[in-house]
Amino acid sequence: MRGIGSYGLFYDPTFIILIPAMLLSLYAQSKVASTFKKYSGYRNSRGYTGKDVAEMILRQAGIYDVRVEHVSGRLTDHYDPRSKVLKLSDAVYNNQSIAAVGVAAHECGHAIQHNTGYTFLKIRHAIFPVVNISSKLAFPIILLGLIANIFFLKLGIILFAAVVLFQLVTLPVEFNASNRAIGILESNAYLSYEEIVPAKKVLSAAALTYVAAAAASISSLLRLLLIAGRRND
Image (tube, rainbow, N blue to C red):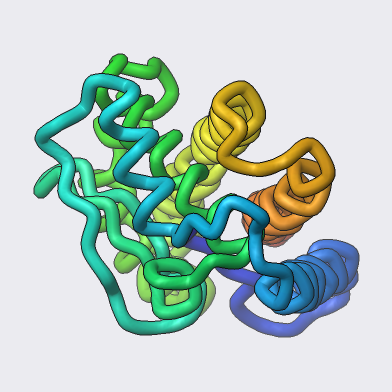
């Protein structure tokens, strides 16, 4: 559950464009933390840990070459397609909560996407190397453009646009993984009917953080375009 984002680079009147996205991001972070904490306190009726559910889902999907491992930290859960390792955090790996099972199933959703060649995941993996470089170069080049030449500002905007594209592609990847997770948990009775609703709330709160990150980057890009437009006048 990780992303790349930025809120803006310097202050001027266009800063107001960023405020709604900043507020949404603060709300999303608070929502995911409070929702995960709440349902981490509810033990699932089957007594499954996050690790148990992850291993069962992977085997059921016919995926035998993905390992389930522990990773330190809070909400650091992720699937690594390069090493084919599904990593579950402290609050998920050995935890029997509804939240833990929901998050573990979500990460399995990514492993299944990888195994089945889900289109948006393939696009995301294809553009990641470029985005990884552009996200590091965009800020200094934009700063150089503001100080020196409009050419560098435009180049920096193009590099930052790649980051925005990455975040937009990430949205269907995350939503699809959550939908897969809920469907699997429900159809295979890993959670009871009553427990599916709170699991959905946990995954919906997590998805909101990706929406907020995309909104923040789109706002920053719009702001940069306005600044570049004024420089051209």
